[in-house]
Length: 103
Image (cartoon, rainbow, N blue to C red; front, side):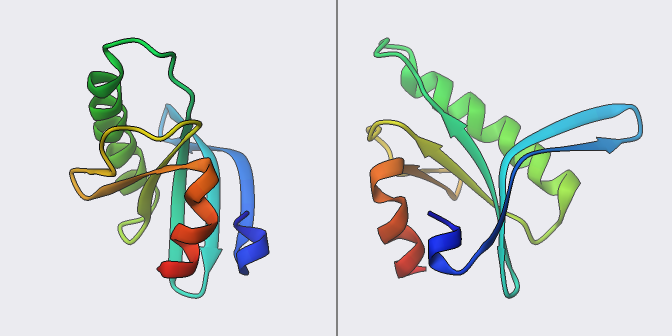
């Protein structure tokens, strides 16, 4: 989807920061934009909102280690009850194309 929208995309990128290893599901770059994508597939449990919030906090930390201008993005398999948390977009995969075109 990123490449179809003119981005250069890398999948499953692993970076080392000292002795800490960080994995990024997708790094998508176009011009001065760098999306750092964390892909999530949660079960239908009632604790999903809590899991989203935890995932966003961890993902933001990984993004700042990578690049201060990186834009964190969570892509989910299904639509969640929130679209953003702590300024991080939470986009269902079926709406990713529209999201990228609107940016």
